[in-house]
Image 1 (cartoon, rainbow, N blue to C red):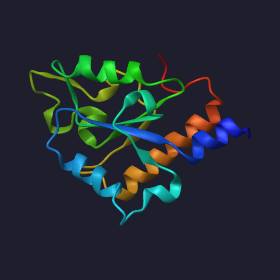
Image 2 (image 1 turned 90 degrees about the horizontal axis):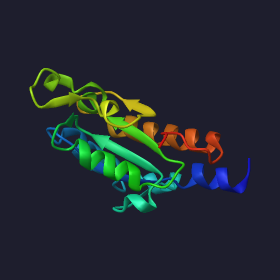
Image 3 (image 1 turned 120 degrees about the vertical axis):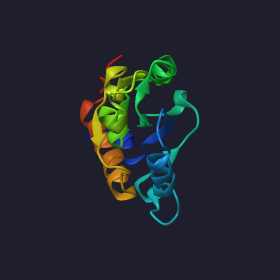
Length: 148
């Protein structure tokens, strides 16, 4: 494994976006980033800038109002990149799937690489999903995972 792939797997930088959700998964995401779970031991760094991120962590479903924002965040991320959909709303819109304003899960707007189901998803599952996305980035060897 080359240095580039090793670094991608050992130090994934993530950016989080909370789309239309109840904030349950967002709270669990931020819980996973606390010292209790110590994600820094895996090299996971939470950044606020998509231009520095390797992995986009999405919570909440996609609707007509936030689809453009989701696409903009995704397009700002450098390749290779991965997307993790956290929670049932991000995976399939959950209980909101029949709402007039919902498009569905995040995969209706951008390609998703890892799905972490749950309502709300547990911090351990979120960390496992991020690490799986980091493995996908390392396996891709720089070609990109999520597509552009």
